Length: 140
Image (cartoon, rainbow, N blue to C red; front, side):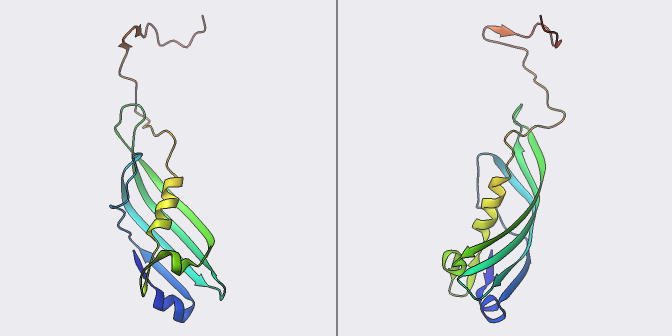
């Protein structure tokens, strides 16, 4: 997602409300991202550090740990940080800034360790050398 460096350099602040295309970013844990929206601002405070504030929302579709079905989970991330030399690191061209790597890094941090649906059940009741005899939780 390209943001204007000209606006940031002339006004000292860049506010944005974008719908990023995250289709080029991939992870083994994420099947896809839906309805992604990023609101935020970048502030040039006169030093080599830029203040960046993001509110990332949308939905992540993950693989169920039980049966690999889709698990839809809400994404709602608040991110605020100071980044040194932001235009040098994330410059896409002479006049644009690409913040998709920052957005992606924050989404990756929110991936659930184990995604399951409330309706997921273990369908397999026997295997090589084992079988479920009883589902009772009694300790014998």
